[in-house]
Image 1 (cartoon, rainbow, N blue to C red):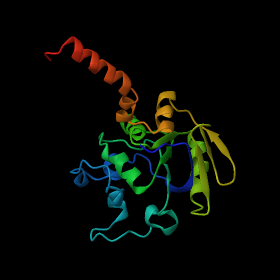
Image 2 (cartoon, helix red, strand yellow):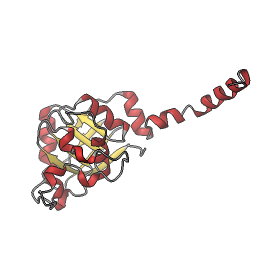
Image 3 (cartoon, rainbow, N blue to C red):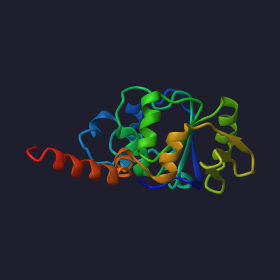
Image 4 (cartoon, rainbow, N blue to C red):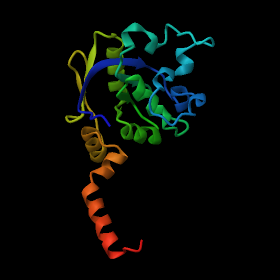
Length: 201
């Protein structure tokens, strides 16, 4: 998993509340078990019309937001079913940080496991970030995980809270497999000892 340390990027504004996982990645795209290839279908029903053409006024279809790496959203982001495909689609599109007043718990935890930093901030601070994001591609936000700050294009900074273990995992690029592999020496030693003590197994 890619390390997350400091991100400077374009932020896309999505001022919608209760964006559920079916809106993030509709159910018809859940057949795959691959983490790649879902970005094109992120927010599919909002991005495309019935004929598959892009809806020009949807934020991620606008030229200034096609390379967005930060998403500023409304309250209760990621609610609904617990599909892990939702963070897969977000990450595959290129978004590495989602900022909102609150998140659904399962979605929030799935983000960390997939290299995405979800940041919960008070509504008034999200409003400032949303307004900054509306400036388009000329406005770059800075998300500093080590310092736990989000800074607007004009230099206004907000502190956010994050669990220390989840922070460690993102900083080091560790998913569940990576965490296990950190113990590879201890696992190998156990296996060697177990084979010697129980050769019949």
